[in-house]
Figure (cartoon, rainbow, N blue to C red):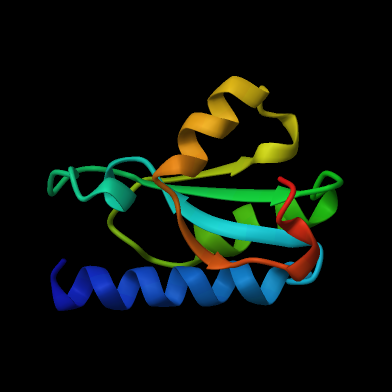
Amino acid sequence: MTKTKEKNLSELKKIILDSINPEEHSVFLFGSRATQTSKHYSDFDIGILGKKPLGKAYHKIINQIEDFFIPYKIDLVDFYFVKNDFKKEVLKGAIFWNKPKDMNSN
């Protein structure tokens, strides 16, 4: 990953982690960026997993991402609403940015 991409990802990570309760939600990178199969034009897939939906925090994060200049598409997914089969598959290759102590069962 280039220095610019690393910086963008670091800033994106900060925006998201500052917008959630890290004791209630895990945040992770998934997809081609996590599995290192991305192309220069690949998007960033960011998942958020908790025992309850993000609610208003989801829209807050989306608005902050839109205000943040990054030359890549960002897909933000609240995994509370994702089917278990897909969730299990995605989590196998995910790179977690944080993981609450009581989230080990998810």
